[in-house]
Image 1 (cartoon, rainbow, N blue to C red):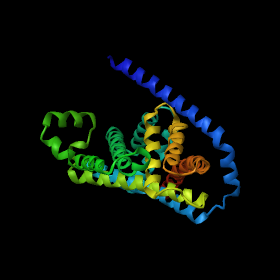
Image 2: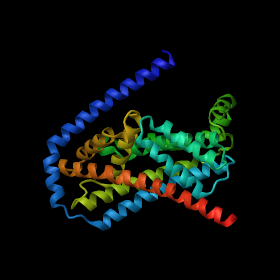
Image 3: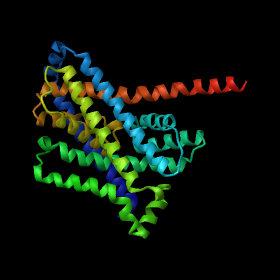
Image 4: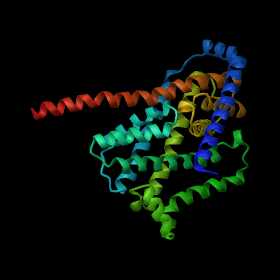
Length: 314
């Protein structure tokens, strides 16, 4: 099959799946919406848990920035933490447009060029780090989603093998020079990535996924008397929907797809239907605010920095 036809087929397939999942979400809202509204009205919001959820989500951002900066530095691209944070946080706005990853890469490249940084290398490293994050997320989902996915305990050897494989990838590629050269040509700057670099990328991605999942659990405790499921379930209920949203390239920020998958996983894991619906709706607002607000702060700080630089030069 020609690449153009394959891409068209993939886009049509993801569109159909997105529409079907969105229809399921609408039906769930119509069915459970009144009970969820009643639960929301009588809910005693616990702001301590809400604050913990916000702090946990921001911590998820911070640890990702640490991991990406390590990848950049090991790829011989010197970059300050603030520069890496600004690149990553502003590029997150691209998620809210169709074909999100393409927009994110474009934003990263533009901002890097504006700051006299190697745009192609930084965009490539961002894509690579994102792929590592998806792989680590899938591994963690396998590990934490046993209740929702019905995974038996002995299958946990599979994600453990996945972690070992990711960390060992640079050493393994060195044994296959032709494959290594092909990858390096497509992703510039990765020739200097070591096992230590990969380990840093894996643990930072894993810790970020866990931080966001714990944040979702804290959010549920802030909205309901009981979370209704374990922390592990909520970590899985964050990762699974997020990955589903990434796969649905036509839905901005996985809108509809991510929400329905989260609701389904929570209900399957024992959270009552109305509570799961409340968590799903508020989680969408919570996650959007934690992505958009830091990006807007970074954008707002840029003119001030330029103004101060001009004043100093004058």
